[in-house]
Image (cartoon, one colour):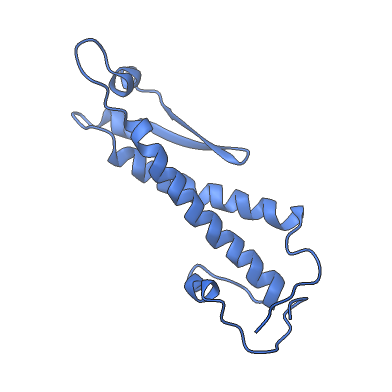
Length: 139
């Protein structure tokens, strides 16, 4: 079966909200990842993390006075690199969240359906579509 598309799949009014939702979903993942990579003695450093949205990105901060020394190390102890070690996992979480949000937008655009968090996105990847059906500009 051949799928043909006639027209724009995404426009700025659809893709920008998808990115924003992916960034917001990644904030939750980022907090879990950062806290998991933070060493614990009293718990103050681990509870000091905050993640905020900045446009289409995230800003990570920890206001605990000694956070920089634990991250970067000193002449007395090696760096723990809690933020540096977290970035690859946060990036992977963002890619996953962005894929889900774009798939939701595609469902809305292509088949006019509504996607929920329970939508099986693996079926979208398999390329399944009933033969010779037209979905909102797709054939």
